[in-house]
Image (cartoon, rainbow, N blue to C red; front, side, top):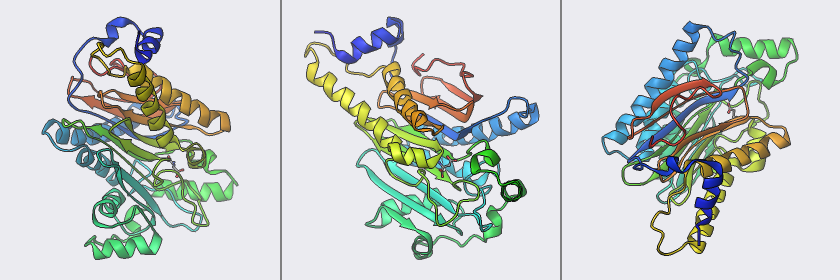
Length: 354
Ligand code: ASP
C-alpha cells in the first residue's frame, strides 16, 4: 500500500524533491510579519534589517553547527533581536497606552515539552532568558508582571531601567495612534515580534518567541507570543513553531499547537497505514508547508493576519504568512542560508536538503 503522506506529497511536489540527505541541523527565525511597503523599504533600511536578521541567524546556526542544543540556538538567535531597536521585542518594544514597555516571551523544548513563559515584565533586558529560567528553575510554566520580576531578581537577573527599552519611533507610533485615533494595526503596519525555531544534531526541536505586544495595549492585554500553544510550541514528535501577528486571532486558533498537532496526527496516520517494508517515514517539506498554510488560512478566515516559522524533525525550515512580508531567515547544515523580507523572495527551495 502506498503511504498516505507520500501519496499526498506526490500530489503536491515532484518526486525529485524527495531525494537527498536530511540536514543534521536547521534553524528559522522571524522578526515579525505585516504590511510592509516596498516603496518605504529603502535600500539602506533593507540592509539594516537584513544585517540584523543575518546576525541572529548566524548566532543560532553557530550553536547548532558546533553541536549545541536547539534550545540554546533559539536563545542565541533571539537575544540579538531583542537587543536590536529595529524589532518589537526587548529594546524597541512598542508602547502600552500608558506609555510603558511591557514584554512577553516564551520558550519550549521539544525533547520533554518543558516550557517557560513571562508576560508584562518591564525591567528584564532579555525576556527570553527569563522565560527559559522559568522553564529550568521553577515548577511553573507562566509567570506575569510583578511576580515574574520578583522571580527574576531572585534568580540574579539585573534590573534594567525602563528607559532602555524606549525608542523614539515607538513613542511616536503611540502618540500618532492617540492623536489620530488609529488602531494598533494602522499605526504598526508590521508586527515586529521576534522568534526562532531549531532542530539540533541530536534530533531535538525547540521554539521561542519574544514581543512587546501591540501598540497602545491596555488593561494588561497579553497576546499569543508568551502563550504556549498559541505563539510558541515544540514537540520532537511533530515540529517547532513560533508565530507573529494579531495575537487575539492566534490565541483563538491556538496556532502553534494546532500546526504541531496536525503534523503529529499526519505522521501517526502514516505510520498506521504504512507498508512495513517501506523504509522512508520522513515527511516531505510540502506536506508540512500544506499544514502550516491551512492553519494560517484559518487565522485569515477569522479576520487575523500574521505568520509562522517552523522546523520539522526532518530539518525542513518553513515559513507561512498571509501578510505582504515577514522579516525572516533560515539556515541548515545542508547549506541553506538566507534572509528575506517580502513574499516569495527565498532563493533556496523550501526543502532544505537541496
Ligand atoms: N503577536 C503579538 C501580539 O499579539 C504581536 C506581534 O506578533 O508582533 O502581542
